[in-house]
Every structure is written in C-alpha cells, then in structure tokens.
Image (cartoon, rainbow, N blue to C red; front, top):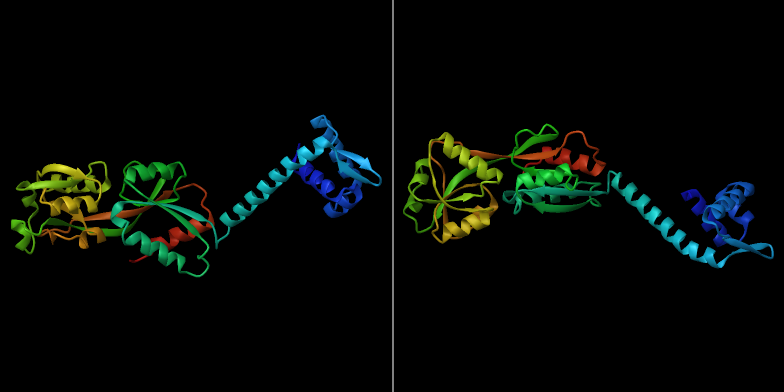
Length: 294
C-alpha cells in the first residue's frame, strides 16, 4: 500500500467515477484502475462496486475511506509543518538558559530577535536550569541552543562567549560590612557563606576563584539561583559571591559590594551542536544572538 494509492482511492470515492478521477489526478485511467485493483488485492476486499455509469463505495470501502481521509489529512498537516520549519520566516526554537539570564537577558534577546523583519512568525519555548542538564537536552535535540557555562570535554558542542558577568559580594543591609565601599575576597573566611549549588556553572566557577585565591569559605548552605541566595542573605543566613544580574540588583534588604583589586567575572556561552542539521530559524537566531548586546 502506497500513499499514492490512497490519494487515488480518495479521488475515486469523491468523484464516484474512474474517468473523472483520472482527469482530476492527471493520470491515465488504466493506471488508476490498475492501482486500485492492486490495492483491493492487497487488502483482500472490494472497495468499489458499479452503480450505473458510476462507482460507489462498498460497505468496507466506506470504512476504509474514513481511515484514508485521516491519513491524508495528517500527511498534509505534516507537510505544512515541515514547510514552516524550513521557512526562514517561520519555525520554532527551543532555548535553554541559566537562571542569571532569566529576568533580563533572555527576554530582551528574544524580543530583539522577533522585532526584526521576517522573524515575527517564529515561536519559542524557553527552559531554564543548570547548564549540565540543559546540555544533556541539547545533545538529545530537545533544545536547539543553550545559554550557560563552559563545560570541558565537549567536542561535539560549539561554545561562543556572549556575556561577561562581574562577580561581587552581597551582604544584608544591617551587616557590619554594609557600610564598606568594597571588600577583600578574604572576608568570605570570616562569615557564613551562601554558595551557588556546586553542580551549577556558577557554583563551580566561584569555588575555583576561592581555591585559586587561597580563600577557604565557610559555606553553610547552597542555593540554586540568585532569588534564593538574595532571600537567604537578606535574612542574615550569611554573605555570598554572586554574578551581576537583574535578580540581585533588584533585591531588597541587601548591599552589593565590589571585590577589591579583582576582575572576577563569569562568562556565559551560547552553546549549540557542532554538526547537526539546524532549521533556518535556528541559524538566524544563532547569528543574531552572537552579536546581541543587552
């Protein structure tokens, strides 16, 4: 059974006449008759019977038509979807990103992309989480692009740096350090520290900074994102070393303090698969994001 036979069968059922169906399909009538005969032989049933000069569906032919209509409709929907996906002005993009980008960078990036001519019909799914989890979804094609931290030993992925986030200390507004203009990294040995989750990119990066600076922080708890960290700092659970992002800048009850004599920062990368097929919409988005400035 072929899709062509199903189209032939549907056309005859609608026209109730072999010659008229053949003209509509632009095929020779013997070709049409032979195709239906082969289909009937394969199914082991008669699909049509004569009615004067016309043909009508048999009882089983009517049942078969219901399935054929559904199949052809689904095929046409699939064809339309594929046309949308390969169109440069339509399609869908699945994006993954880390929490520091959730409040400002990603919304502005996507809005800027959609505001460009020819991009208005492109749709997005936005997902946030740890870089390692997002990269797993990237490798299995659940995501088209990820914005997160660098990961070692990923030869099949392309990491493009797109953003440097300054790192600074945050303390409660009532903390003894709140009146300082800047602090030394060593103060993280003197007070309880709230750290990023050790499995996150920022968790790994901040721990490397402490280690390379010979600072041994008193980490009393971990949190997965800046909202949680800021809330714990505000309630005087400790101090923290965090990335510059909207969630921290807009948080109440904390004081942001630069780190003395340092240029500590966290680099965010745009990550995508190196050798996998990408629909035009994804290619356009990668090109736009690579030069986007918030």
